[in-house]
Length: 182
Length: 333
Image 1: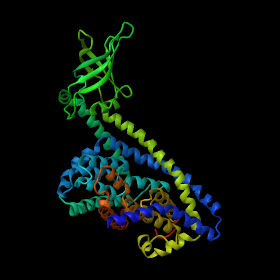
Image 2: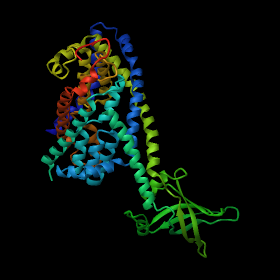
Image 3: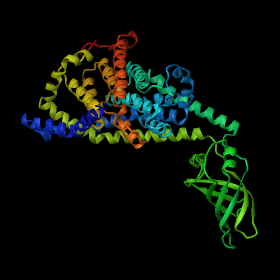
Image 4: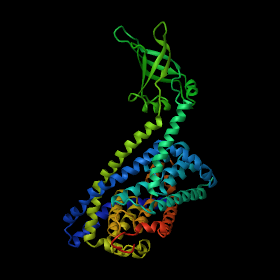
């Protein structure tokens, strides 16, 4: 069942981009759009959008980089450990849960390490990889998406995003405990 | 909120680094200025012209473990060394080698010379045949490790950020071009009409046939398929379209926040990265996490949407939308 699902999604994601290009540009020809001219017209904004992101991304990544390099994550993991013990979340996966919204590469590193220490099919290994798939890098997405349109006052986007992260992590613990529980 | 979290990351980071370094200095965690002893197998003896000694330093494993209070395993530690014998105080240098204990590999990063750890030799007693020696030495002091790390991280991440942005230019241009063609052909509008019942509820402030809706739908679809190369440009395109409806440039609208939360929750049908890492780690069933990940991300998406819809009703966040001077332009504020 999961294998079939996996195979289907795999194929769809491989053919999606070529298919999209074909349909979009092909449909343009059908509708007598001057495809080349219109494409170039749209594409020229690419540079500006990318460049506009830089200050936002620098601000965000430098703060996260300092936080990561200082080892503050371990301190936080220690502070939070009584709460996570209560809900049956192994202490080893706590840095993973804390790192996930902050840094994609950081959480990937933690996931890889947890798997090499505890094994990919251990409860910790399954939980760590589920956590990795259960949410996105909130701070990065926030910086890039809002940076592209010059939004500085992000209002309730961050609190809502962090609430989503917390529930994503809790959901991961819950489902892993039900299916692969200890 | 972002202001406070941002400054907290920086301040907490620097304070923790300061605390850790101070603690290490007090406890002498890195055992600076403590004499260590070992044996030396000399491979190249000094000659009258060249006073350098080359050899292999041999350290007893359990002695090393006790010295640093660490648990490394293996045979005795063997490291190629070079001793500069002609100086007043002979210096010994260890190159970075695969056999080096992890703790020393860490030290090399903070050492005064690149890829090398140096030490001052306190005593050197060469045996009569000149083949071996007893040696005592003091490794160069390692200090402010976390502070140096924080400095390096700040500089590194600043350039990583620029690299990421520069890397976006090409794919950004590609998708913006494709989207423009699709728009001109009226394809986006048809796609938008299909999902109007859903998007009307999620984004009540956005006219259902606005191009922003089409871009958002395509971004969410690309995200679910795990096509991050297409998803980010499409998402940024959606943001630009949403910004056209923004009466107060520089402040996020409700629709922008809702759209962002859907993105940060990151619902993906096939968590490809996690599956790949599991496969590399030798999992018997790498795909076992597909269902659990969808469940987790589903929880995140639902919780995020509920949170974003509740929070936008708070006075605290509503007041930011008020446009000063000139009344309210654009759609509902």
